[in-house]
Amino acid sequence: MTNRELKIEELKIFHCVYKTRLSDKYRKRKLYQPVDPRKIICFIPGTIVEIQVKEGDHVIEGSEILILEAMKMKNRIKSPVSGTVKSVNVSKGEKVMKGKLLIEIL
Amino acid sequence: MPLDKKIRELQEKREKILLGGGEKAIEKQKAMGKRTARERILTLLDKGSFNEYDLFVEHTARDFDMQTKSLPSDGVVIGTGTIYDAPVAIYAQDFTVAGGSLGLMHSRKITKIMDHALKMRIPLIGINDSGGARIQEGVDSLAGYGEIFFRNTLSSGVIPQLSVILGPCAGGAVYSPALTDFVFVVENISKMFITGPEVIKTVLGEEISMEDLGGAWVHSETTGNAHFYAESEDQCFEQIKKLISFIPWSNENKARPFEPAEPLKDFNIDDIVPDDARLPYDVRDVIKAVVDSSDFFEIHKNWARNMVIGFGRIDGNTVGFVANQPIEMAGVLDVDSSDKAARFIRYCDAFNIPIITFVDLPGYLPGVDQEHAGVIRHGAKVLYAYSEATVPKITVIIRKAYGGGYIAMGSRHLRADFVFAWPGAEIAVMGPEGAANIIFRREIAAADDPDKMRKQKVEEYKAKFSNPYVAASRGYVDSVIEPSETRKLLIHAVSVSDNKSVFLPKKKHGIPPF
Image: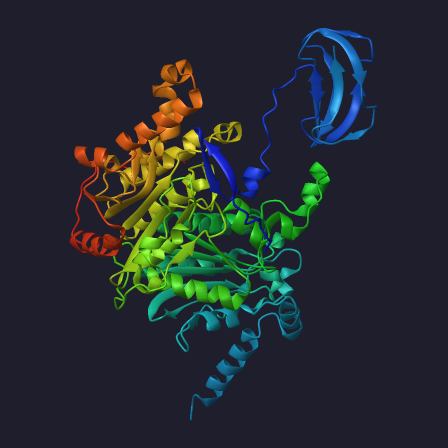
């Protein structure tokens, strides 16, 4: 059992402000962030087994940029956009967590 | 006496088997704060009522040297008995015997008592305390789980099925409880998950303790997998007994009536609900002000608290309550609260329990997370469950009933049999603030003092539409009633609905938005 916040707070629904308790789920909800296709984010924890680009390289949409091994599967990560590699934030053999920024493309 | 010797032999055999996994294993079990399987059954059931079957069943495994091992009763106790004189079938896994692991004969004992419960139309209680599949028995063990799941499904809606998690219940084993009506968990004892902390760590690199991953509180508060949370086995057994007292033995019976009793004087229905629809109160106080002895037995107390569900009695008869809870998240409908209400409505409908709905909600919870979590699909379950239910449906609109929330919460349009509204009810397409902003947008924008104009228009809208009389003029509300008349009218509504009979179109089954 955990101690929960029993404070009465405000919740706005359709122009009306209600006095009520807020749930932990509501408090902890992730605010929506639009997806930026220029940022290659790790979608599953795993290991970088291959990096096919370096800073300054030109990549075209659909070209393979790195291989991420996770759950015994080698995921070939392709660039969703064409552009120049701004930064490579991982190295070969590195273990990466979900949500890590791997490569940024300008 | 010619049989003396044989009787003594039987007694000795019994004595040995009743010791389960032996004294050392029992000691270990106790050290974890757990009772043994047979102790649990004897504590839960009426004194002297339990009869055990299949005491002498042995496992049949021959691989991995299993033929040399004896597993008393194959690690599970089955039998029948009574709770408050209501017959029940019960099984309890015995963790002291091979960790309560499930092999072929173990599963056959469980399915035997399940078949018995279904045939006899009596509730089934399963006490889970098992390390999982008995690996040495391979695919026979998997077959055993499958046979249990199949019977859980066939029995669903025919006999009440209760799952009590008093130990580990992991991997495939979790699906039997998930298929049953009510799941009970106990602090520090219950553990439920599909994949454990170790696998999660290896595969995903996430570190979490067993308690934080699938402990009692997590399932009670976060996942909603558990309906009842207790701090001890004793408290858990009291909850089971109380539940059994509220529900019928099967879908062919009604719950046993109790001696009618007045609500306690502590709950004065006139003093609970603030006039201002934006201010909170605890809707459970309203329920306690109308039920016999103010005895409200809440289900899913810690999960999706913005919706309150549970049993109570009206003039001695069991009813199910579904109520928005203004003190939690303003009582909004969202993904979890929709699931919670919809499943309970279906439970009541399956087991001939009238449904009383108390309405006070601002509508659905706005937000990207809700939309992306499928609030459309989940919210639809509430509409489906109310529309499909043929038990008596009585709805009391306490205060706000706006928009889609009004329709969903047991409205006349979903075939409520009685719709009552308190004089403070606001039945409208949306709250006055929102409505005024839309309808009078131009007037407000053009005004010298838009804020003043907005306030004025909100008041105008309130006076005209934020009341129960527009809905009552269409017959959507049957009566506008004083709060203090609520109990009297509920008693009346329940009693005149006793012979309710409606026919739905013939079909194999509907396709609810699961």
